[in-house]
Image (tube, rainbow, N blue to C red; front, side, top):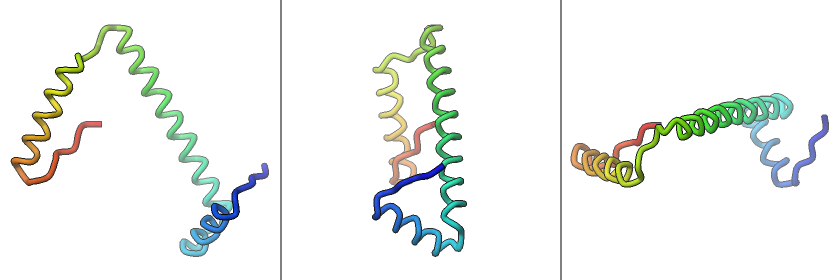
Length: 87
């Protein structure tokens, strides 16, 4: 397989390879592996979410907004920083 990158991207890749003392081929394999893994995960999440919607497992927008506002208020009150939302 042959890849062509814009000169700026190729320069950044070469700099990364030098800084990390890894080969560009190794970095590209790792990047593609991450991309494929992420896309698999994302497709599963979309499929599962679509199925949940079809089953009627939804939360109305207003409930979500209310929950988020509560979390923000609670987080700021406890340590001055917003809380992190569940993923």
